[in-house]
Image 1 (cartoon, rainbow, N blue to C red):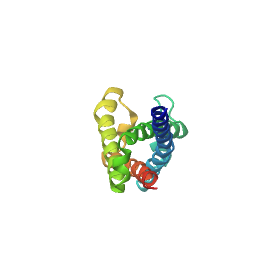
Image 2: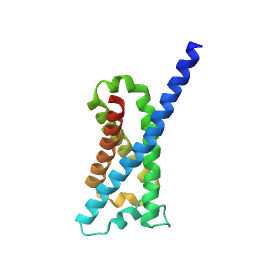
Image 3: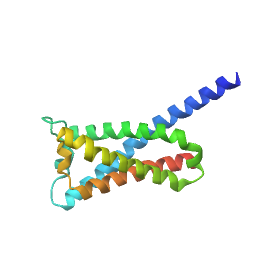
Image 4: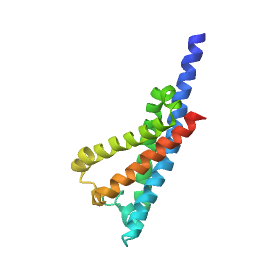
Amino acid sequence: MDKTGSISENSSNLSTLAVDGLIYGLVSGIAMVVCLAAFTLLSGDSSGSTLELFSVEGLATPWQGLFGHLSVSVVYGALFGAMIWLMKSYLASRKILSWLAGLIYAVILLLVAQFVVFPTTSSPVEAIPTWQWVFANGVYGLVLGGLFARKLSG
Protein backbone atom coordinates (compact mmCIF):
# COMPACT_ATOMS: atom_id res chain seq x y z
CA MET A 1 0.00 0.00 0.00
CA ASP A 2 2.81 2.36 0.83
CA LYS A 3 4.48 1.80 -2.55
CA THR A 4 1.25 2.55 -4.41
CA GLY A 5 0.93 5.86 -2.59
CA SER A 6 4.45 6.89 -3.49
CA ILE A 7 4.00 5.91 -7.13
CA SER A 8 0.82 7.94 -7.49
CA GLU A 9 2.46 10.82 -5.62
CA ASN A 10 5.42 10.75 -8.03
CA SER A 11 3.11 10.55 -11.04
CA SER A 12 1.13 13.46 -9.68
CA ASN A 13 4.29 15.49 -9.27
CA LEU A 14 5.36 14.64 -12.82
CA SER A 15 2.00 15.63 -14.25
CA THR A 16 1.92 18.78 -12.12
CA LEU A 17 5.34 19.84 -13.36
CA ALA A 18 4.38 19.07 -16.96
CA VAL A 19 1.22 21.19 -16.63
CA ASP A 20 3.24 23.93 -14.96
CA GLY A 21 5.59 23.62 -17.92
CA LEU A 22 2.69 24.25 -20.29
CA ILE A 23 1.84 27.45 -18.46
CA TYR A 24 5.46 28.52 -18.00
CA GLY A 25 6.16 27.71 -21.65
CA LEU A 26 3.31 30.01 -22.65
CA VAL A 27 4.66 32.83 -20.48
CA SER A 28 8.20 32.24 -21.79
CA GLY A 29 6.95 32.15 -25.38
CA ILE A 30 5.20 35.48 -24.85
CA ALA A 31 8.44 36.93 -23.42
CA MET A 32 10.31 35.67 -26.48
CA VAL A 33 7.75 37.25 -28.84
CA VAL A 34 7.90 40.55 -26.95
CA CYS A 35 11.70 40.48 -27.28
CA LEU A 36 11.56 39.80 -31.02
CA ALA A 37 8.83 42.41 -31.50
CA ALA A 38 10.97 45.00 -29.70
CA PHE A 39 13.91 44.24 -32.00
CA THR A 40 11.65 44.51 -35.03
CA LEU A 41 10.12 47.79 -33.91
CA LEU A 42 13.55 49.24 -33.17
CA SER A 43 14.64 48.38 -36.70
CA GLY A 44 11.64 50.28 -38.10
CA ASP A 45 9.53 47.32 -39.24
CA SER A 46 6.17 46.24 -37.87
CA SER A 47 6.10 43.50 -35.25
CA GLY A 48 3.53 41.71 -37.39
CA SER A 49 6.20 41.07 -40.00
CA THR A 50 8.20 39.04 -37.47
CA LEU A 51 5.14 37.10 -36.30
CA GLU A 52 4.32 36.20 -39.90
CA LEU A 53 7.63 34.33 -40.06
CA PHE A 54 6.29 31.81 -37.53
CA SER A 55 3.31 30.94 -39.75
CA VAL A 56 2.97 27.78 -41.77
CA GLU A 57 3.91 28.43 -45.39
CA GLY A 58 1.00 29.88 -47.31
CA LEU A 59 -0.80 30.99 -44.14
CA ALA A 60 1.24 34.05 -43.28
CA THR A 61 -0.75 36.22 -40.89
CA PRO A 62 0.63 37.63 -37.65
CA TRP A 63 -2.07 35.91 -35.56
CA GLN A 64 -1.35 32.51 -37.06
CA GLY A 65 2.34 33.06 -36.49
CA LEU A 66 1.74 34.08 -32.88
CA PHE A 67 -0.46 31.09 -32.11
CA GLY A 68 1.90 28.73 -33.92
CA HIS A 69 4.86 30.04 -31.92
CA LEU A 70 2.98 29.84 -28.63
CA SER A 71 1.84 26.29 -29.42
CA VAL A 72 5.44 25.20 -29.84
CA SER A 73 6.43 27.14 -26.71
CA VAL A 74 3.92 25.30 -24.51
CA VAL A 75 4.99 21.89 -25.82
CA TYR A 76 8.64 22.69 -25.13
CA GLY A 77 7.64 24.04 -21.71
CA ALA A 78 5.85 20.78 -20.85
CA LEU A 79 8.90 18.78 -21.94
CA PHE A 80 11.10 20.96 -19.76
CA GLY A 81 8.71 20.42 -16.83
CA ALA A 82 8.99 16.66 -17.30
CA MET A 83 12.78 16.92 -17.36
CA ILE A 84 12.74 19.10 -14.24
CA TRP A 85 10.86 16.31 -12.47
CA LEU A 86 13.93 14.10 -12.88
CA MET A 87 16.18 16.70 -11.24
CA LYS A 88 13.78 18.52 -8.91
CA SER A 89 15.42 17.55 -5.63
CA TYR A 90 18.79 18.73 -6.89
CA LEU A 91 17.45 21.94 -8.44
CA ALA A 92 15.23 22.86 -5.48
CA SER A 93 18.21 23.44 -3.23
CA ARG A 94 20.01 25.67 -5.74
CA LYS A 95 17.81 28.30 -7.37
CA ILE A 96 20.47 29.40 -9.85
CA LEU A 97 20.65 25.90 -11.31
CA SER A 98 17.02 26.10 -12.50
CA TRP A 99 17.85 29.33 -14.32
CA LEU A 100 20.92 27.69 -15.80
CA ALA A 101 18.95 24.57 -16.77
CA GLY A 102 16.43 26.78 -18.59
CA LEU A 103 19.21 28.57 -20.44
CA ILE A 104 20.93 25.30 -21.41
CA TYR A 105 17.58 23.92 -22.58
CA ALA A 106 17.05 27.03 -24.74
CA VAL A 107 20.51 26.63 -26.26
CA ILE A 108 19.73 23.00 -27.12
CA LEU A 109 16.43 24.06 -28.72
CA LEU A 110 18.26 26.79 -30.63
CA LEU A 111 20.88 24.37 -31.94
CA VAL A 112 18.25 21.82 -33.00
CA ALA A 113 16.33 24.58 -34.80
CA GLN A 114 19.42 26.01 -36.51
CA PHE A 115 21.04 22.78 -37.61
CA VAL A 116 18.17 20.29 -37.97
CA VAL A 117 14.80 22.00 -38.41
CA PHE A 118 15.66 25.08 -40.49
CA PRO A 119 17.89 23.36 -43.06
CA THR A 120 15.36 20.58 -43.67
CA THR A 121 12.25 22.78 -43.78
CA SER A 122 13.52 26.08 -45.22
CA SER A 123 11.62 27.82 -42.44
CA PRO A 124 10.84 31.53 -42.86
CA VAL A 125 12.07 32.02 -39.28
CA GLU A 126 15.60 31.88 -40.70
CA ALA A 127 15.02 35.48 -41.84
CA ILE A 128 15.36 36.64 -38.23
CA PRO A 129 18.93 37.87 -37.66
CA THR A 130 20.94 35.25 -35.80
CA TRP A 131 21.89 37.51 -32.89
CA GLN A 132 18.20 38.37 -32.31
CA TRP A 133 17.21 34.70 -32.51
CA VAL A 134 19.93 33.76 -30.00
CA PHE A 135 18.97 36.56 -27.61
CA ALA A 136 15.22 35.75 -27.83
CA ASN A 137 15.89 32.06 -27.18
CA GLY A 138 17.96 33.06 -24.16
CA VAL A 139 15.03 35.10 -22.88
CA TYR A 140 12.75 32.07 -23.36
CA GLY A 141 15.12 29.81 -21.41
CA LEU A 142 15.78 32.27 -18.59
CA VAL A 143 12.09 32.99 -18.07
CA LEU A 144 11.24 29.27 -18.19
CA GLY A 145 14.04 28.36 -15.77
CA GLY A 146 13.22 31.30 -13.51
CA LEU A 147 9.58 30.31 -13.21
CA PHE A 148 10.56 26.77 -12.29
CA ALA A 149 13.18 28.09 -9.83
CA ARG A 150 10.45 30.05 -8.11
CA LYS A 151 8.13 27.02 -7.98
CA LEU A 152 10.77 24.60 -6.71
CA SER A 153 12.09 26.91 -4.01
CA GLY A 154 8.79 27.71 -2.41
